[in-house]
Length: 540
Image (cartoon, rainbow, N blue to C red; front, side, top):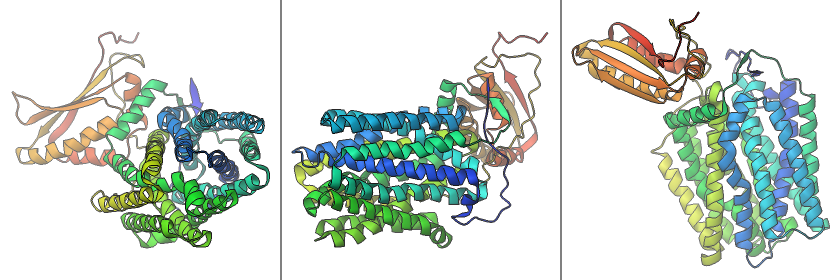
């Protein structure tokens, strides 16, 4: 079975693009518009779901559980969804998700209109929407890299974040107006209508054909994606930094309805304005980050944005009115976006294409999972210690994360070449293994000069990570007892098909640089062997 990957050859010869450059590409322009409108409906739905029970005696728990219900399925399902996005046609996956959202939105509207929406059922529907998001996010974001050249990828990523932030501003503001005039039910209908545009654009999009490849099987692809993240230190570092910021920082999103209702005494329209202020700040951040990034390194930007976010979050608890809170939330929206867009762009630039959807899926799992776990904790703290205590604790923990960032510094990834590089020779075999034959062992003999042994062992640790993140399940290095200057590196791969994928597109220039460093330390060329299951047969 084969599929079109949609991947097109690209070069990095173009100069670094402005933020608007990706709009010159028709497919990106229309899909971006459809996603932006869909996001407006999604944020309006979130506001409607939270406001529906804002006056309930258990509002602090119910409102924060709405965020948990929307984020938890994304945490649980994003990686399997990323596998589907890597191995199936992303266009039709996205279309199916839009149809699913339309059905959920109509049901929400009808049941709420009939006054048949208790808290438990609302949370169940919110969870169902989260299931759709779990599939949509890791399907859409890798498409960005397909729609634009690499020189425009950072700009396209910022535009994607811009669409989310425009929705954060417009969706809650529209929801507030609608709730104040007609109640919550029409907001759910609005969400269903907003999805229709993206569904129509996906139907009309003619995805460019590309070289076909054999589709990866689901379970091996799932395990390979997990191994890549496990054995890639830079990706793990980004995920840790995201968790350190999002766990306390997301308290603002979880507690904002209570800040509006209890701290500022506002109604639905006032709450919509507060949410819109966050969105306006986020939009401003997205539009200005290109110029900011040209002047500040990523780590410096993250420190400034994180500290600013913490300070304005704490100041909300002394804001005397809506008009003081709004500029504070604009600044907070800027800080939130500066952090997350930086993390997102660094990850997009770092991940190689063959595992991009799965890597983004793990990022989404971390981002949403942390929020899903943290939201009810902030609700419990608010319920038992008060809103002010919860906000001050959260702001203090954001500052702790800023301090940790001075130790856990991100490397620069913008200049890395992550395009696939095929430089291994095709294996010469006297047998013909089946694609699923395995496990496969590959052993390589290395003869090392005595004065280079220490350096050789150090470089082989880098080679180990290269083998494991590209599909290997185990790697070991041994010294030959009868020949002390000879070492043997052995790595295993689950199947012959997986090993062929290592040969055909999972390696990058970074992997080749490691192998070149090893080769420079050898006294004679390395000698490799493929060890196959005994059932492998000689070809007729």
